[in-house]
Length: 293
Image: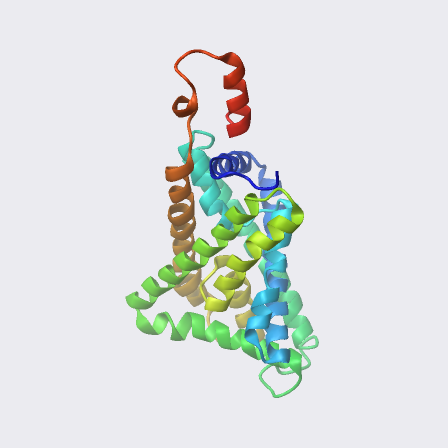
């Protein structure tokens, strides 16, 4: 059967988190690099399609292709790990030390991937620095201008200008973004087939993109490419007024609103389902069905 029952889903999330806790630093960086790079390219696609069609929503609909490839290829995206690793820790399959180790290295890997794509796209959009991205021109200049506009708006105008309120708003929008992104991760795990995984994860990712919420890996690309293109926003501001609060919000959104919620309501222990009399055959069957290890 393609559908995964809720208690099996939670056990699968715990198992996935436990496996991620033991991945080597090399693989965390490589898989994190892929995820950051592909999301950077997905952002460029979404902006380009939105500008060309004058329908930004169309770009948001296409954006999840990058996320879908991360799910299918088993890569590392720090925002999904904000939900999975705590679940494994609560279940005794990981530790908080291993959790923070995973988060740190994957965050770095995601950033390196977005940085590489930001540099490549900055060179491409400016034709190797021969075209002023701020000047009127074709679609490439419009994409570059959009990136710079978003960089200025989502660092200085929306957050720095409002001080502590702005910092709090960035956390709040980061919370909502990763609530939806981790919902996409969870819904992808509900299906065992490729079409099922794609359909299940697509809408939550489209939703966060359309709503304009704050996702740290997407922001790593936008707020690295913006200064490179010449937005004039100092990079330290991008870190303090966006990367820091958005990461905090993403952790809360993933860990509390998906990880803790699903773990609390659907985590089933063997003690709750086994009969009082000993039945070794039944125990083995239930262990296999519930994924007990």
